[in-house]
Image 1 (cartoon, rainbow over the protein chains, first blue to last red):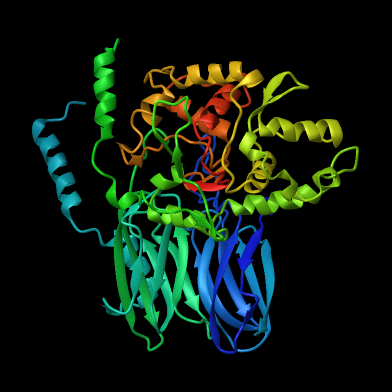
Image 2 (image 1 turned 180 degrees about the vertical axis):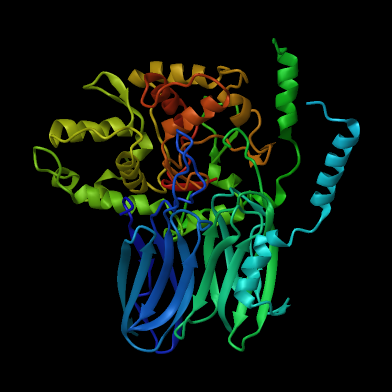
Length: 109
Length: 139
Length: 282
């Protein structure tokens, strides 16, 4: 498991039915690109977060296929339509098989 | 082993000839990436906005934005990076719009290309030239 | 091969392109975070040779400035989150956490504005890192954190943000005076093959470009700083080390008395600017 991987997600606490809200996500991850070499000259193997997805009450909102050119501490900003009260689930998949998740509830205003 | 001037010239000449021949086996990696995404379809030059700084403060963290109303997905290619692929945004049924922001790594000054796949199956392309600089003492 | 001072000077001069940075920085932008306007320009303290002191934030590109204006966009806040957890976590033989004695991290408000400062009991100038480790080793019975370790830098970020907005106010008189003098001398001493003093760039040439970098005044009110280049938080001593290494000199050690003295002097050059930590720079 990559070290110290912490997700951080910003979702408004409430929204009107049908409102479009902005969601921001950040996750601390070194995103080892596979381009760097260690002290002995050996290539440090790629180890990145390769996919991110956001779902709401089981329906997909947004997802990203990441390559090594996404900056460390991957940041995404995107929008979601809120049809009802519920939960946003955020999932990050790591090359090493780890899966990081976060959940944020939203109410209807 | 002594090589005659004639032989050397012949060797040099043929090397130059080979270098000038188109080498179809080494098609441009950027074109490949785009073709894989579009299937070779035409790309319109409207309908997709790519926002990026003209000069990146640092190539390791460059903020970029895409906006493609009606898009299903948007692929980002860094044409000057060791590998062109950067990321692909996919907008699901509950996406509020087709606007996304992220931060990317650029190895040097280059064109960043965005290709959008629209819901109706058509494609659009936009590109931005981003200058990536060498810093001062701080590197 | 002996390179004359003149040609070195010319080479240095050539590296400084004197064109207006223009699109690279909005020098009149205001730094507002969560509705609080931070002081990024102030009258220079009396002991200085220049009139106005300016935060490094002002010199950065629009995009970089924007990254610091939103606590969510600022990746340095990841460190604050991590340290907030560490603050509550008991560690060491005494079974205590920071919170056990200090309660809320908010109790640290004002501390960052005074760092580094003379510690009476120790009879020495102490940086924030030493105060933290003193608590860990003497009161928590825990192991000291490396000066430049992620844990330590994260904690300095958590403590710094408690003073965000408050003006830097380090003491340079009384017992701090000899350290301050030492730091001031270092600031004006040319180091390395490139024979550069801090002042050559940060006092004589702030606002100019060195290659493609927009030179700042080298203020430290924003530390610890999230550097876009390293995509991680950097401590002051780490930055001093980098700068001196870039003059091609044998650099001082992180945590050394020399760097602490320099830290005090450089901090005093920023007295009046708001604490910004964690800030975002290039």
